[in-house]
Length: 82
Image (cartoon, rainbow, N blue to C red; front, side, top):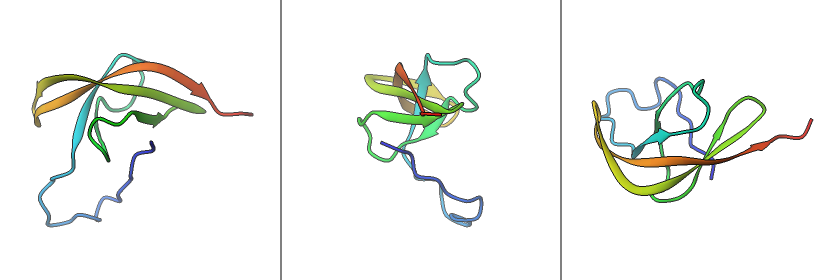
């Protein structure tokens, strides 16, 4: 399931209430380890270097600077054709 994207001013003046998750595993070069999620518990598909990194919910939580967040663990990569 793809992630929704917002521009920098889409939520100006609003509290950040979007659901987020912590990513574990996968490529070390991923630009973010705390990411927004659309549907908690659903698999995540993160676009990265001509493919997608896939993460699954673990049922665990991790304390972060943004509070306790669900942990998603890397389980596979798919490549885009071309």
